[in-house]
Length: 190
Ligand SMILES: Cc1cn([C@H]2C[C@H](O)[C@@H](COP(=O)(O)OP(=O)(O)O[C@H]3O[C@H](C)C(=O)[C@H](O)[C@H]3O)O2)c(=O)[nH]c1=O
Image: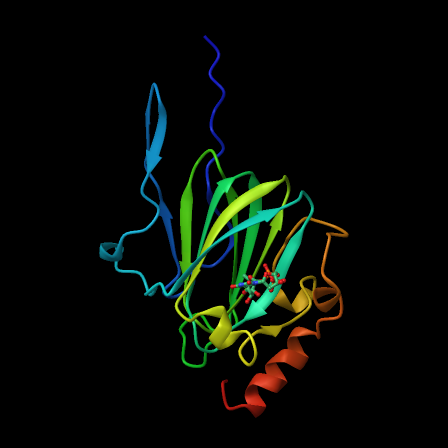
């Protein structure tokens, strides 16, 4: 009997970044459907959630690259197929200036939890639904702690394997990684 192997949500490039955790989730299926726990405080991750959001994306959409000095984040793909890139900018981190790329599938649910000071962005190969959480509310960080850089800057060292994604104007006009780092250094963040 042929069985279609489920694609695995996993890290596909880069290094194991300090304090970043990919938690594989257990989907409990029965004749009615399934039940999946998506977050537990006892996992011991950096996240103390303050806000949860549901995000729908069309195929070929790229969201990011974003950077926050003050809050940690959570990402869990519920439906679809995406790649998620991180780059550690944190002063003093053992993995500063290192990157990691993850490939996530809704059929193999997993939660990616990463600390403040981590550049992040995600690309959706298919129409997708994901859950996102942050440790500071958007109303508090959106105005002064929502930094950006260009998603395709080669100095990010993220082998996205994509071309011409759908971007917002802000994402299309985001500065280079070097320009962002210089701005963060001027703020004393790095
Ligand atoms: C983030 C956020 C957005 N919005 C509104 C603001 C816009 O009208 C719309 C889309 O927001 P935005 O273009 O910022 O969404 P993303 O490009 O996915 O970016 C967001 O998610 C990435 C990962 C980030 O790290 C950003 O900080 C965060 O802005 O939703 C809200 O009402 N509440 C929110 O918490």
